[in-house]
Image (cartoon, rainbow, N blue to C red; front, side, top):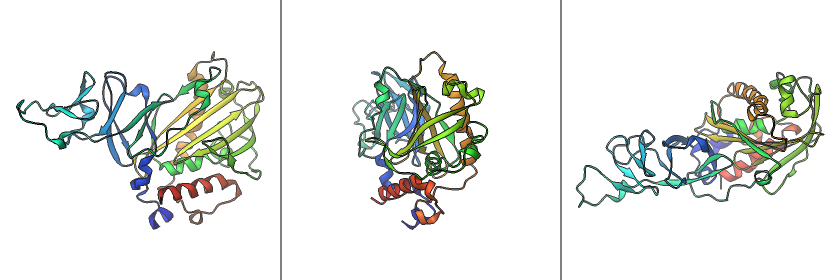
Amino acid sequence: MEKILNNTEGFVDKQSLKNYWYVVALADDVNSNPISVKLLNEDFVIWRESNGGLTAAEERCPHRQAPLSHGHLENGCLVCPYHGWTFSESGKCINIPSAADSVPIPPRAHLNTVEVIEKYGLIWLCSGKPLNPLFELEEESDPSFRRINTEVQKWNVAATRMVDNFLDITHFPYVHAGTFGAGQDTKVPNITLEDLDDDFFGYRYEILAANPEEAKNTSGSNEESVERSMTSGFNLPLTVRSTITYKSGLEHIILLLSTPIDDVSSYFTFVIWRNDDFTIPAEEVISFDLAIGEEDRVMLEKLNGAMPLDKTALVNVQSDKASVEWRRQLLKLING
């Protein structure tokens, strides 16, 4: 526990973290070829089954530890690139080409599979036993909203640092001076934490944001600045949702997903839901948010190591309430 409190070295090795869902790829990334992903310091292979479903298993073949993601698919089965061992959609080894037909396949030849699902245009992995189903977002089934996915990036920063950043608004005038933060009031009114809905806990706030030319497709306004009614909230362990509502009634909902690869690197992607008229190309809508994300990445990659979770390890002020509460709950989760 001492490491978690003060340094968080070995954060990703905590067994309790394995029992949650994490994004590791876009759904479109898993097609006719297997892919390799890394989650919580463990390597996995994911492939499409013949019926369009998914299988995820340990990346290394149990024979000679060849990377199975370098293999190929035959009728939904995964064939190892080294000796041709073939694994069914359940991970069971069904063929060893060098063995006689009468020789039974050793039980240890089968792969250890893990839980994998496809939702919101994303591939989610759970390497343990899922404690809860994945949260539901009502906008996904609302025909007035469209979903826009963005690529899964690799950031050289701890996932805990990312979540802390996404829950914070005081960095806007500084880190985001080149996008929407220019001229923004640095004073933050008192924050009240609350249940935003059944799945996310956080706070509500109002800001007057800069609206440069490149932001106008996102905001739906031609004004030089726009009022935003916003919420920021977390879902344990590492998911953040930010909602933006403009005076016009336009809603822009961002799901920010940080997946720990190891203690110092993470996958990052965000998903947007909008109730616009769908006429503006998705690429134009997300270009401004991608620029904001890049500003965050550049700053966060300057920070060292994982985020200390104990509230006494860092100096906190009232505007840090959401992060302090998230860290408190995350520490409780880790310690079981």
